[in-house]
Length: 397
Image 1 (cartoon, rainbow, N blue to C red):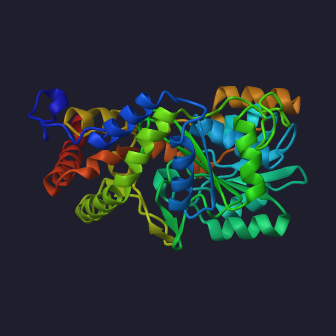
Image 2 (image 1 turned 90 degrees about the vertical axis):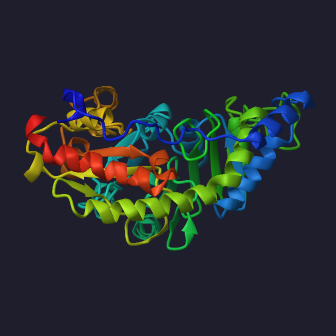
Image 3 (image 1 turned 180 degrees about the horizontal axis):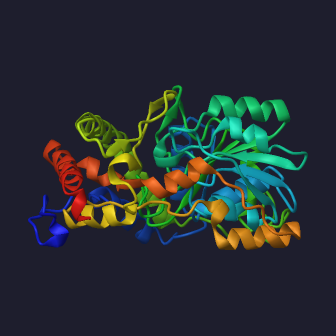
């Protein structure tokens, strides 16, 4: 009997806590506290921005208050403004699109790949118009988008590329770290991410001029060497605090070890789930040479589970003691506030376009959080046991 109906739970103990912290975070935080320099004038923000950029394979890094701001500032640095079009994926967090909307730009949604969860280069090319300014791919679950195909299209049409790598810390495409493959990369350190300071963001680039523009935009338009009340751009106070940077410096030191542990446990889970008929683990793309496994995407096979809502499956899985999430349930092209914005912006009824792959993913794909892969092999076995139990008892759902 399923636990949700009174049966025994597959798992009774919790998975490893997240976030994970040690005495390193404490020491760095106390150091900042005692320094008396909690914001401007401290050393940790610049130190983190430099170290993190280098980790991601970039020459320059700019720390900021969150990942949403990082995307907005990156787009603005590339000159995105009123009426420009930014091509992006509908299968992502709303901040990807709202960053463009804040600048008065128009998010244009291209469908995701047939088998994966990332934007399709073929569909991107179909969406390009004379107003297109930037391509904004998202590396969902830390799975790299096809940056070879995207870069080729961008070069052909003279477009900028901003990587939304909010979920991509440490992941690689063909041996190169995410955030180093476009003009700019954007990262988030929100609570759920594989390294976190509660909130926080970063922009990476190999272009010095773009880096300086981003630094200015997050620091109310100031430029290096200028007077304190000299503002050369219309910028904002999007600065990161010294406390956030202190935590992130400690978090970064453990990231490689955690990615490797997730990799081993993911491979074990992938092998186990091949025995099930109703659940399909979505694998990383072929060009992915390293993946951080920010979440584990699992597709429900409809020939087995028919019309059962994925939210119900997640509810039942949680009752068995396995943390899980329905993930994105409405692709962005169907979000009401975005449709209303486009209607006003275009002065017409929004096009009710069908993006079938994104809509199917929103209907059929649920997630396991990354920290379930930070435990033991027995912890991984419990995931398999719970999914197998749900499959056996699907008639009770």
